Image (cartoon, rainbow over all chains, first blue to last red; front, top):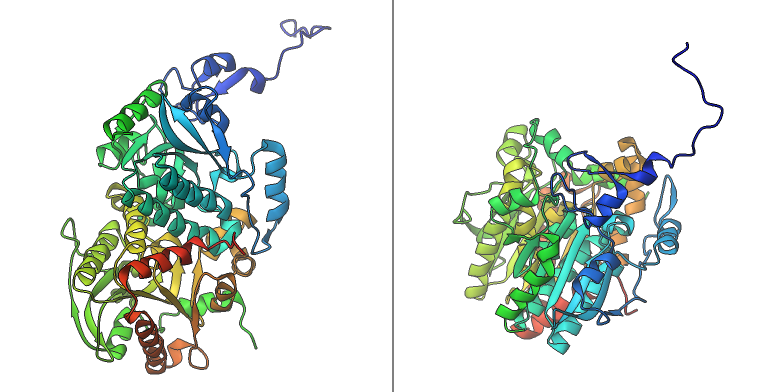
Length: 276
Length: 266
């Protein structure tokens, strides 16, 4: 075994997960620093990786203009929900403690390239970006404040769907938010919806799909039912690009796929066309 | 003895339970079905038309389940495609135009999870439907008659009055689906069903529905005529309540009703 000589002193190397980022779409490996330098976009396949709400706000709102609203509106536990791994209340409180966020959407007023707006950004890291009663309440209030202050609404979605721990009341947030969006539109205000990876289930089936303009980021997963659920229903393999932003654009459900570095400019341009 | 949640799930899915066509036959003096979304197809999973209930003109629409395998195959087990939701909006627009109230009967495992459904915009169709019914300028009375399966149910369940049969269930996710995710075992559906609070009595307490309609002893499948009579009476009472309300006020009230779901103001 002469070829194997364990060295007495191993150099201390950082663990793999500290150094490498793996693109979830094409499985290419990159140094984390390169991934970060490229704004969390895969240099190989152009998949636009997930951002936290705060990272997104920093990229969209003009410096120093974002004023957060409704931070006190948080989850509710009307069901006193417990599952096999414990109480919903404990889980969501742990998420709040860890993330510093109090719901799955962060809402605030700001300026986007000089255009006054109400900006909302969902955070997938908060309970899978699920739509809970607090999320729905923040969105409804945002619509109402936008109407009162004549602000356009720009809302970034990133969500697995309704938050089942909040039962029927989470489902009802789909109706509540859609009704609020309808009133915003009736008031003649623009609603720009940005679909980011992933936007599925009850969120895609409510406010996320209702934009006057629906924008998607490249390679974002956007759909209603889960791929596996569909494959099990139809007993067929689905195409690789099924439910991708590109697939949705092809079928007519998004207005434009916009690169992250051009997103702010594109949103501002649309607001300009709309006269806001 | 009080039934468990999973017992009600079984009753809600009982093939012998009255379905849309049974309710129409037993409740309506007349029914003229209207087909198609004028875009793609005529979805047999969600059907509707003009009808008379106790002399009142209504537009009635609902999910169509069958009692036999053949009927269910034809109706896709009550799982609508986007075409179904777009047809529902088209028909409800006619009702609005001619000032006829809308009655919807909800009974679906959920919107159909299929390839074409996604390609034709299942998410968009449901979203549009939620927005549409929130602003429809005619009274809308909803009855959850069997399975209220998530977004596919809610798409035609945004109304001024939401009634629910005693053994019907209405949920954000099926108990099996929830158990598979949160219990990592689909067999734990009975536990999930309890935890999700999906029975009519629980939903009434949570404020998600307005009224529970009693079923005959043993369940609706034991006596279709009595079940339909109870639904008819409750629907007519709701229509009478809503009849004189001006459209603007109707919309304000409907908005306030769904706006309050989640109880942030109590």
